[in-house]
Image (cartoon, rainbow, N blue to C red; front, side, top):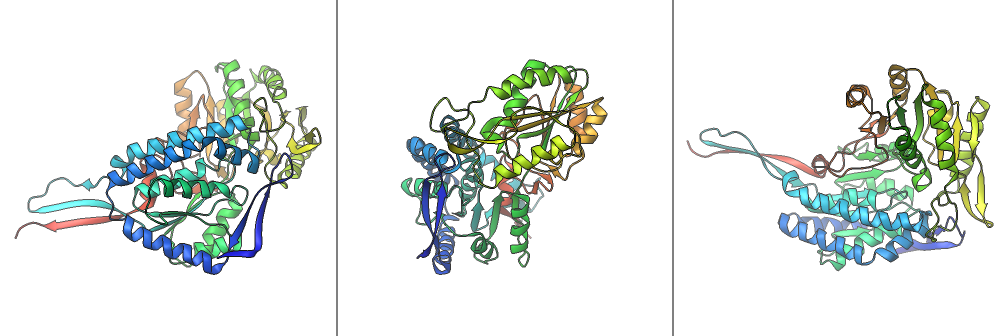
Length: 465
């Protein structure tokens, strides 16, 4: 049953009013969810891949049919401008359909070369119960990365969504139920962090996928430490961009600014530090300033709003601290730099541009998770590479150049899970998504993303004596 003494109330970051309220499950209710998930997993593992694919397609279509209400929930819970929330629903559906499309390849048996008298192949068996712990900043995308491939692989899924965006877990569970899924195949669970960690250590859970902070990742690993389980961790970033002297500067500035500001900078793969070759540094900064100032803060339910409020209350003060540190260390503040509101409402942070930055600044050492673009000048590709790799994080990195050879050389040396050329802040579902260093471990998306959601079984048959 729900714990009626404890309710989670999520505030709307713009209005300050309650966006939603859910009851936490007590220990007994959480245990029942896991029992139901195990029963569903035992039944679902014998289903055909064709049935799994058809179910996932129906579930996606169900979410599309509710796109308006789902997008509104996202906006009210975490402040994403409504146009971007609608875009997230569309991207979620497209990503799901890509995963459905590659499932036959990803889950196919690996057949070894013929050996007379023997049959040798590797089959991919379901794990059982997958616990999905998605993040609030892209609440649909971080969830679909696990839910759809896990179901396709023959698992049941328990979605314990972020306490900032709990309704999104319910949307996935409701969609699969309406699509005709077996009872409890995909369930939503609401509980606090302490109980979440307890569930991670529960033997009824076969795998854990966590998207969130580095601190949260460490807590998940600790909770799983007494079990032979390897949680998949998609953690934070402090992602660098290098602007080379031969880039298309106008397009580069436009894309880098957007990569830093989209979703109010609340993205693990947002551009968070920019190294610009000294020959184009002054012009880059001059071109970036009007683009940064052009963002429109306001009610995220209005179409004209392009920069929404900050989702988490504590983050505003952290962002102000980053700017203070940068200015104290010599940075020039060219735009923004402080907390604000619109018409007396909302916890906003102004879109911010900082020039003449240095590697010692906190913005270049820690994930900021806000609309801040810090820029520094470098003298060469080699200096840019050294500084880009000078981080305990390694999610993505981007190189902006007209020379593919330059991008290839830098990509070979950059310590990041994804290296972009002339692109940033984007997940291609056909490519594996992974973090290096403290940005996480494990893989989602692409055909490789299915590997962690299955276990290999070797089939070694002697066919004759």
